[in-house]
Length: 375
Image 1 (cartoon, rainbow, N blue to C red):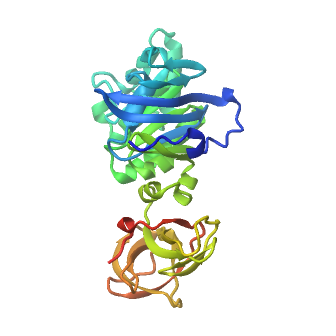
Image 2: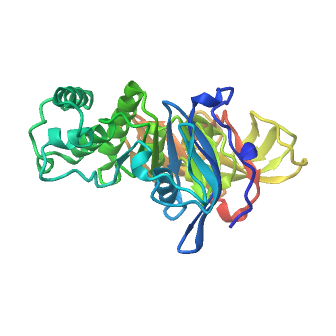
Image 3: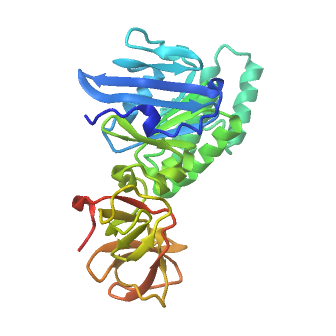
């Protein structure tokens, strides 16, 4: 496993002028093992009350095991987990899941097929007065914008409706924290994005703190106040979606978050780069010596159409998305980049177009030829 880098160096923790009482959940240097094999090392992050955090990463990076650890289903090998001011997991002790006051939303929603929607939502309210249960269920049905489906059964609902009911059931007992494990992965792309936004708004309206795991960057960005990008059992960067996109801490984050292609460049001075698309002045000062060979990340929105520009590129392929078209372009030297054009610009493969570079958040890393897209 890669070397563990101290938490305070790797993370921007919520700006963190926050009082400690604002922190609901904190993991401190947590190690996790499965069947004697290391799954995560040195995990550390904190989440404020009312915030939504997402653990984002490829399959096998340890994000689901981390979620299970927070829930109390998996022990820690080292470190500790603190929830609402109480230490709930150490190598020697582990508070049971039912005593952590958590809500869970799973990928398959896990609704009880033999119960109506109303009874599913009320499941966690047993023991409370009947009138209180009815009010809470009615309020939640209105909150998830499904006020008239209380008497239906799960099989009578669409996938999106089932997930909203699963969220309402998790919210019903007013948990300290809601954990969501790939909750939208079984839905189609458009529904995932729309439901992610709806769930974000519902959680914020209730002031509920949540942690979600996903491998989908768009889901993460739609939901999160802060995202932890995971790789090989470690959090590489914990940051806002904006900073992850525009200020990735390393090449892995840069490539995993958002579309983009690298172009070759040479550092002319601490702020200026001579690139394959011309000389670009950066928005930050680079500490490498003049003449350093680097790779510069260009996002599609950094490459703007400009019919009068001297910089020309050839359309290789296009992907129409509605309001915009994503073009794959070949530069004269063969390097390929991506560009966003307004959809009323319609160009066919083989056509030459003019472009200009407007990279207001310039991201560069020392040269690694294995990651440069060319040809």
